[in-house]
Length: 105
Image (cartoon, rainbow, N blue to C red; front, side, top):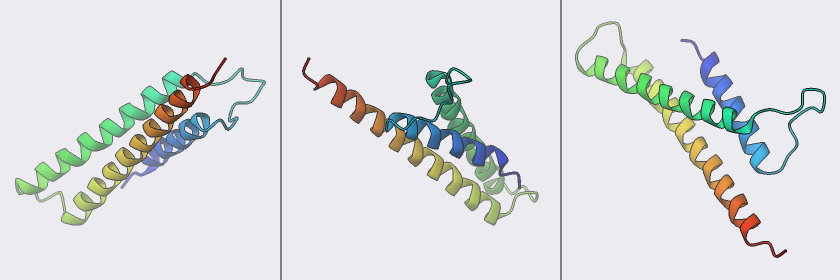
């Protein structure tokens, strides 16, 4: 089972969460990363993980002999965890936005 894509997505989501929490993850030499592109990429990877897990579950339920229950359950849990992490990143972003909006000038 290839977990590199999931690990890469989790790394990007952690970087996004760090950026939302105000931690500096960019290096001055590169000029910084495009936050919106990183966030969009992370959301696309979460979506792809969910679609892949759902397809695998459908294949298993239809009786496909190439898919076993353990792989289905692992992929469904990975998709669920990645979605939960994305929700937490969203919550941090909303909280940061509200903090900025409540600041007095």
